[in-house]
Length: 253
Image (spheres, rainbow, N blue to C red):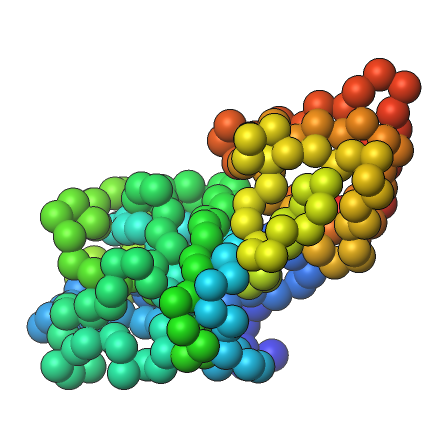
């Protein structure tokens, strides 16, 4: 195996040691890099054109797992942006630090990610106002005070060419429409569990593949099966299963 190929292996590679979070591979990017030979900051991004534009006024749930590499002496936030096209990233040249996008298009880690041993989940919601959102971009965008912090390299690691950099592994990226769940399906999709919504004896069906987002208390008062559903429980969300009722979870996550 060539040296070039060995640098990009999983779990051991040029930037450190990290098993994949999901399956057997992942991506990696410099969210910021200030190497000596560049004489200025530069950043890397991952982007994917969506199979079709997102639908207006429907909430979407986006998530990814990230981990900071060992060969790193900076740490930053890690962000996703949902854009109409790449032209919405405003930058004057390839080495410019002015990667500005509208704040309402960004899903960001709540703070700077310094975790190296484990994977950290970054997730959030985005509701497009038109039918033009067609590109997902991962990286670090708007310049704000304190967005990068200095840290020590992991033991045994350094940058041979000097300078400073933050390198992150990226894995298991998801973008899914949010499906509502209540006694009767409302006309507009919304988060479930608001105002003590319930799966009631009216017989609401949870379709295979639906995304269930529980924002408050979800009361289940009939036998119910979550079958191949992504179940997202927000900070204040709870599921309450009434006495004598069975909740079955099959292949959900």
